[in-house]
Picture 1 (cartoon, rainbow, N blue to C red):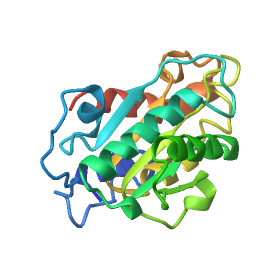
Picture 2: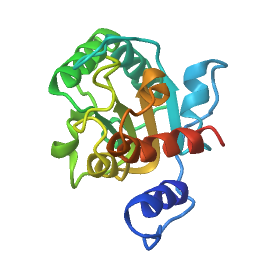
Picture 3: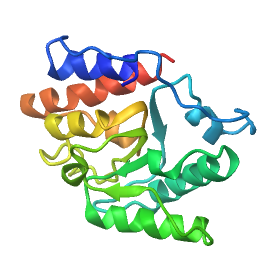
Length: 201
């Protein structure tokens, strides 16, 4: 696991006792960067923790906006940088969003017979990938602090699937919405800390 990913996981869930066996792990993208756009910026191998803000509001279990961004990123990785498709894992909280992402991939890569592994947090447990793309999906104001969405254990499982890079795709509302109770504040803290740390690279 990349050292900065390991440090984040260790700080929040393992009392600083978790250590990386290969601290210098990072993505290997041939001839990076090839493009001067935001996708290349977010895929930068030097940035192991990344937040991708995708504007949308009112979504519950599906976000076409996030699915499209993920599909474009996968296209860039696999076609332009020859990144192994088996080393990309895509996680979202909802099965409906997984289907939305798969459909976006089929539209974006119509001639591809293989796609990255896409599944929910629970079904990804025990698997590892060099790169994990996480789709938060939800942007409905009343659901942004649900116990299901902001469960620290599920966040731990999600981020610790990544060996080299973790990309968090979400509406800006996901991080800007202020918790209403102490319980929500505690649950929100790891996500807020992730956002802050992702801005430091």
